[in-house]
Length: 437
Image (cartoon, rainbow, N blue to C red; front, top):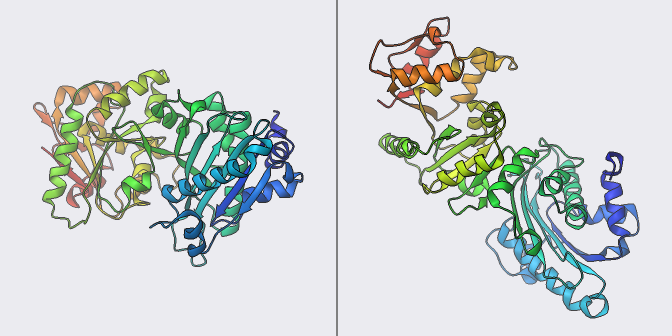
């Protein structure tokens, strides 16, 4: 398909004109934008068996069963189960030998009138790849970034058509399928931060590779993966919880990583915060760091992830080049304490002014974003030799720093040799930088 043919109108028309696919649509919370596209382009009778939008909770519960949360994976799967079984029950005898059936569903919390809600949703599709075959499921969680309800509805509609088009015409290779989901969209408008693929058509998809590709293909800046090698919705892990983050590329197998997280957790507990929920420790693997290493093979990156998951902690893959982006992302989900665990050699990189040339406020703006409300850096000491080697490997100027002549380098015994000395001292005196020596 040529680039000019990849717009939503042409995709919807091709779906309508395909006599081999047919199914139902159940859409709640952001209009009926997916079905609307199919009616808008004409020929929808060739694609649409039924549309429904059960907005009222009692109607919804009567059809799909009761639930505690209406915008949830649980509700989405109940909708898909009911709709797919109904399609098969009513149509299998008459056209099951020539038709691949599907059930599309979404449950979305688009922007309310006051703009006070979390704008997100769940989108799902159960489909046969060929007539009579076992079904496959695609489940997505999305965050909506547009600032009006109408634009958010439109974004859901475009993504839904992309999803239908992708599963029927572009399932393989995985990169192509994922890239096609964002046709006509951008990361500013919609994030797909969770994707689950199951069924015979997706039996060989590795969840770790899927998470990596979600970021590389521009669907989300962050993917969270559990020790069970499962992608999970970040909101589920981070919402209203204290967060402890250790950034890095984690190239070696040294379990010092775990020791840093554990020590940070103990230190946070000692600060006496009264959070109702337990802290969540995360290893954050930054894909931008890997790109600076001249792009290792995906298999090498996946091996690193597997080693970290063996520790029993979650992983957060991201596309964030600087740490202040991570801080801003986490604050979307929690106002509880956020603590970064790192060696002092990583901390000194914050004072490389060249990293912030694109920010109007330069390093001052970057540090302000990094050390936002309730955010601190826990800096661990390291031997002088290791500190020097690290700076050398990162092409950082050691002469920029006053360092001790021997022993361990700590956040307390180094200072920049420049105008940034006062900024560094301010961070120490306000406890934004905490010495873990």
